[in-house]
Length: 61
Image (cartoon, rainbow, N blue to C red; front, side, top):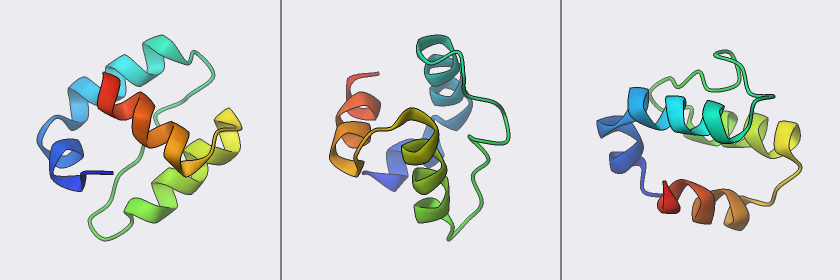
């Protein structure tokens, strides 16, 4: 995943992900500097998607 893209458009990305996946909460999408893998792990667990699948979803938003 391109972390620069995520950092630059985080609020917009959060809104799009929550709209697409209603089960996501603000806590699931909490992003802290240096903790990108932790956030991706939460998303993988919550959505049942692989890292590659999540990368494709985020890239398509």
